[in-house]
Length: 181
Image 1 (tube, rainbow, N blue to C red):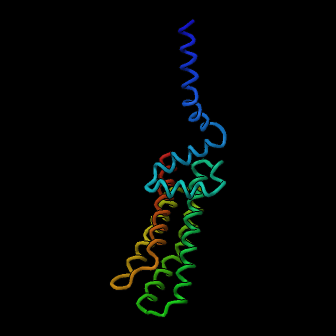
Image 2: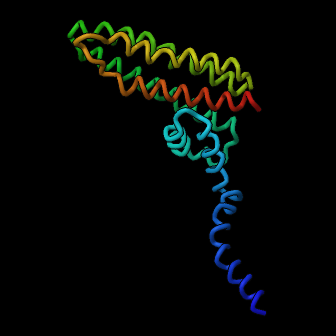
Image 3: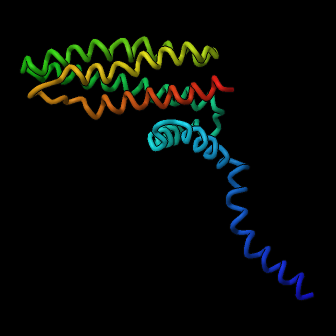
């Protein structure tokens, strides 16, 4: 009798520790596990998790769906940065800053309007290698933009360039997970 009461007590004490992790495997929290597992395989876990959790569709998405959502976030950020650059170009009169800004607009325009949308289309079609190729192409644009600012002129785009690059990297990491099967 004493032994079975001890086992019951042990079960009662351990049950709360075991049940919360198991509960995440079933129901809506299970999607959080997919997001967590997916993002842990990327270079920027925090950025990945925050970006995916900001979209309610992530709760019911599979890995391909998460890749599409991340690519949408990446494309939106590139488009927002392009708009920001255009606004800066209109306000700036300093030629030392205007030329690099115009150059950056020339990089972000095809990135936001062509390269990333082509990557999204390829991803949806299951053409993961082409999507990865386009994402790699897009990921090169922000550092190239940043490199145009030098000397005494600091870049007004540093934070945006870093974010755009890192979003491309996370998108590529998720596409690479899809390629691995």
